[in-house]
Length: 117
Image (cartoon, rainbow, N blue to C red; front, side, top):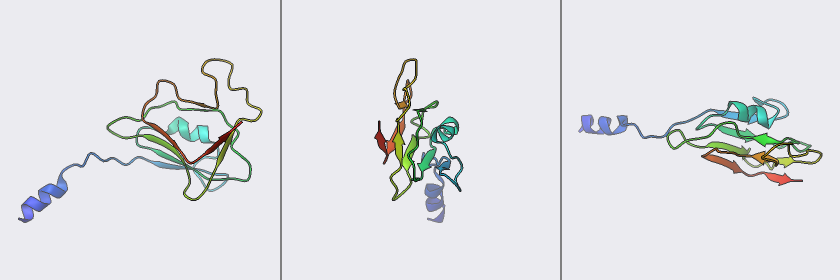
């Protein structure tokens, strides 16, 4: 009985856990969202803290998540509502244009942001 239970508990579950990065004005791993996106790989989560002023950035996902290791998740820190604002940004001079660019990437999640202008 013990051997059977141990064997079942020792089987791989297929669940992997990536790195969690924090973007914050202070005390985080990064102060700019794009810097965190540049290092994130499949299974990683980027938690973005709310700050007094919006994050004024054009974002591009350079990497994909995958079906084995999971999504790259960009999400608001629990209980907070960060803003990504395009005021004053031109959206880029080449295709694709936009505030958040996801081109030929898969397994990407963006959760809990106000995106404006």
